[in-house]
Length: 373
Image 1 (cartoon, helix red, strand yellow):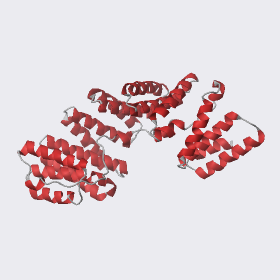
Image 2 (tube, one colour):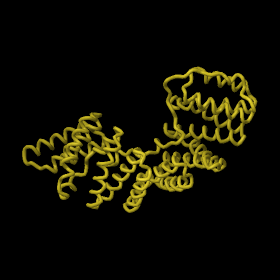
Image 3 (tube, one colour):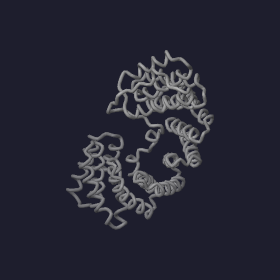
Image 4 (cartoon, rainbow, N blue to C red):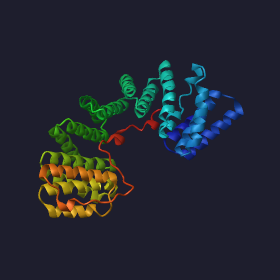
């Protein structure tokens, strides 16, 4: 049908053709029969199209209108219309409380009619909303329920994301043992799915967990595995280059803490060369230069340290960067008993800075808005 063709074109990103198919289908409906079920399906498809075109307010108004009508329909009619984008729009706008209400209703209805696939994705979105609303216990419980259904329907991709999110929750709560368990489950699934991006991201997260548990050697094993894998990869995407830079940085820090100063400097050097070759990695530059200064001071190579400090001083520092510098000074005081004079000067702040996160949570997160319908 024209409506089904429109839906297919939306999935393929062919918006102009999708728009024509949907409008043609609406004209036929208006001419030949009043079918409220088909009309609502078309309205929801139109909202999907508006969303892809960036017309958020129009998509929101249309989706809210159809959802309010749909939720009061009898089950026999409701189960024919399962394509409303409203939770996705709310989540994109960070309206998590509103999204939660819709997802609770949807998840319950999907369970009643045996639509386990849609129920699983609704539960995933619901858990995400709970997490952002600081309802951590409910988020964890909902992810566990989602995992149970994902296993039942053999949806390994969704199951991977569920275990990753459970690992993230455990990480934030500093529940390291459960974080290891969840991340290992996620890693096994990512490897089974031959997903190198998620495999690498999870491996870095496991390294960070090991570091926080005081197992620097375990962390080093994970990080070296990441580095060896990516250094020999034939064609690195930007996310993989970001992971490689992150792994070099983490290895440099761990080696400093273990008094492996030469190895630390080498890791920071590798990161520095990578950043110079790829401008998209510029957000890592400050931390890498700071690491090179730190390692060279500890190696008593002050001339090299001053060269990197000059590079660092080409722009003023933000408040976050000043905090990083202060942490390095505290470590130098601890290991050397003093801070070299050339490194003891303050810089003024800038108001803007592109932050890099220690955990690769965003890179690994499921794009929920693509999977809730």
